[in-house]
Image (cartoon, rainbow, N blue to C red; front, top):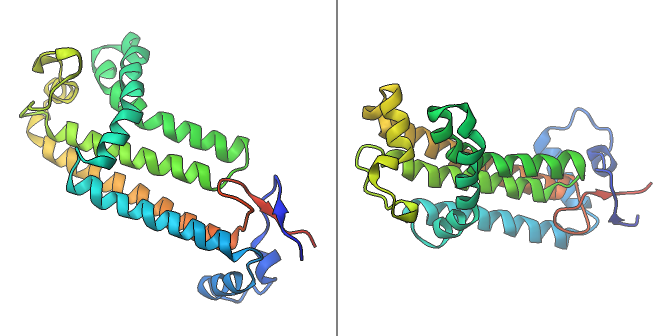
Length: 216
């Protein structure tokens, strides 16, 4: 049985047959045993293990290596989001920064998956969206204190989430929104890692980001 990159995702049944009575765990074990290029499965599994470790670094120190990298990758879209949402009123304008710093990666990931039929790259992009939420959680939780420095030397009165919560009467609950955002971000990253590891074996491919096809 040969193995080469293609544009279609192979069916799980091409690996494990049509045994519909087998449990998901049994099917996964069979897929691992019959994987045509296990080195790629191992490599991608290691990648997702590394992605999981980034959560620890980001939560331990939001200003550490991962937090800083994510900030650098998302701050431009954050500011662009304010501009895009400006015509829709002050509240949406302030929300637009956080919305677009997350949404841009969701949309690009969706294009990768539905438009280019990739597997790994959209999951990586969605994991980045999860990390962007972790960054946003720090900003959200700072609404009352307004201790974070703002870009361009702007005063604390320009703090997005202080304005958002002040407008909606929710300023006392900034910690709760930050907690929920943090949990959501971690959940997205963990979900992407688990799905990515599962698909590394159940949807084998020739290189990261590509789908593969197992010809009969």
